[in-house]
Image (tube, rainbow, N blue to C red; front, side):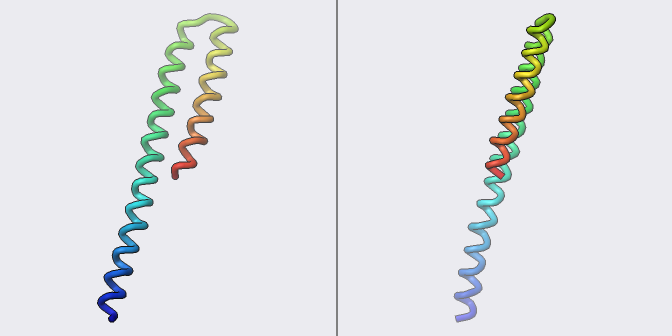
Length: 75
């Protein structure tokens, strides 16, 4: 009986452990995508001048923060 309980406990531990690993990989991928998108947006903003550039940078930062917040839900 102890062997069966140990086997069941091991299976449960592996199941929950792999779920956590998958979630952290999903989080990591989402954060990397958010950073890549932010880098691309900043590059675009650098091509602009004056107020348009300022507005573009503000929007890029806001989008990046929103993407980070969304990624944190996958943690």
